[in-house]
Amino acid sequence: MVVLGAGVGGLTAALELKKAGYSVVVLEAAGRAGGRNMTVRHGDLIDEVGNPQICDFDDEPHMYFNAGPARIPSSHRNVLHYCKELGVELEFFINENKETYIQDDAMLDGKPIKNREFTTNARGFMAEIMAKNFTNAELDQPFDEWEIEALMRSLRRMGDLDEDMIYRGSTRGGYSHGGFLEHGHAHETIALRDLLKSALFSEALSQNEGETGPMLFQPVGGMDQIIKGYLRKLSDEVFYNVMVTSVMLQNDGIEVVYEHKGIKYKIEADYCFNSIPTHLMTGIDNNFSADYKEAMAYPRRGEAYKSAFQAKERFWEKDDIFGGISWTNQPIEQIWYPPHGMYKEKGIILAAYNYGGGMHFTQLTQEERIETAIRQGEKVHPNYRGLVEKGITIAWHRMNHMLGCSARWQKSRSGFTQEEERLFQTLRQPAGNRHYTIGDQMTKHTAWQESAILSAHWAINDMLARKSGSTMPGQRV
Image 1 (cartoon, helix red, strand yellow):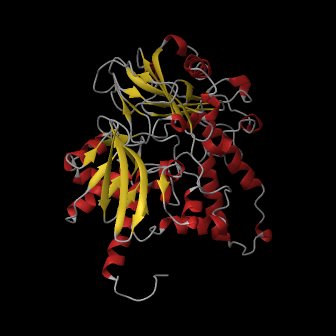
Image 2 (cartoon, rainbow, N blue to C red):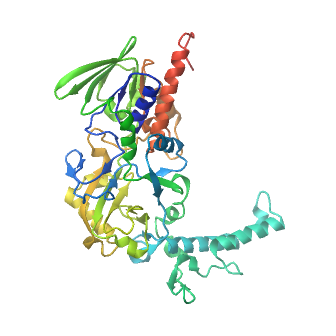
Image 3 (cartoon, rainbow, N blue to C red):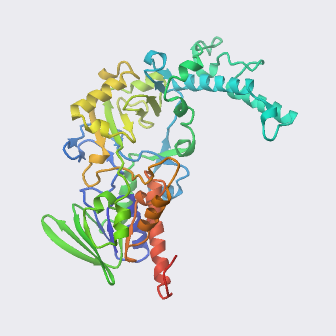
């Protein structure tokens, strides 16, 4: 068996095939395994085309940056399974923290406000509006008296409304002063029309839902501890700095030609599990069918962008922030605070995370990227410039051997079109019954390690099913 690419999907396929008794070879183009599972530490190379960087963070165990995946939802059972199997220690990751900030130039003259102030006021006014405008007669199925009372009681509790169902502010948003030895005084109420001026209004109310809600985890010491766990089981199977030049279907298998240190080699295998990004695979010689090539060329490449700073001191902890994300309506979009290393002198802060607009930053020089992150970060933390140093940037659509982030199948938020579904199912099936495309790119829920793992499982199970049923006439449908 030959596996192309040593990311999470490829390593999962290799591990499971090896456990099943197959002989496995993994070919990786880069000098490291992991793909987008990449933790950056002191001395590491950030291999961006045209903008290589060497990380200059202090050489301390807690001074690292997860440049790719950074959180593991508790519902991602397969990732958690492999963490257990591979001996990867986990700790809690804090995604939403009400002590972080929300900042928007269109709201309150750009003044950052605590997440708890924003959400408390938003929920209060929304609960009041719902209570005032509730009309039982207009419902398709009117409530009875008990149900109405239960609804009103819930609205009163949700919005901290008074007995007249009016929102007049709440100490849930924090105290302006007092609160312990003396009665606490709530912050001044922020008008709903001011909150609505922010494009982050809906985002602020839904951060704690779905996969990014609790509980979330991260490996102790960096996300690449998962990759190190795989490699402890696959130390002899993975080969690095290998450039695949052709993938050819044969009558009874598959042939892969690759180059290493200027010398070409050929591998003949029974099956190929290929996690090379499809937009790169289209440029590698192959003899796949026209339909398969069409499907392979369809997914668009993602353009996620991140940057990080070393903080000279953990200034956010002085502001009661321990983990979590501040949101700003600027291109940097997010600032993440590390949930680990509490009370140590320094820390690594994620200074920008733009999932879909990374092209904006690659138009800038490295110096301009760093200055942009500082200037925009100052709107959240006014003393930011003097507190951060040693900045790095990660533009995934320019990272060597990947040139993209998570694949984008859908062009519409409404879901897959019939044509997109046809292309997806075409690429999901093995070319010539020998070549499987795997990775999160071959799932309906890209950008998660769970998806990459499940794609490998699906491909292996499909191969085994086809082998066991190979004597049956006709084709599987």
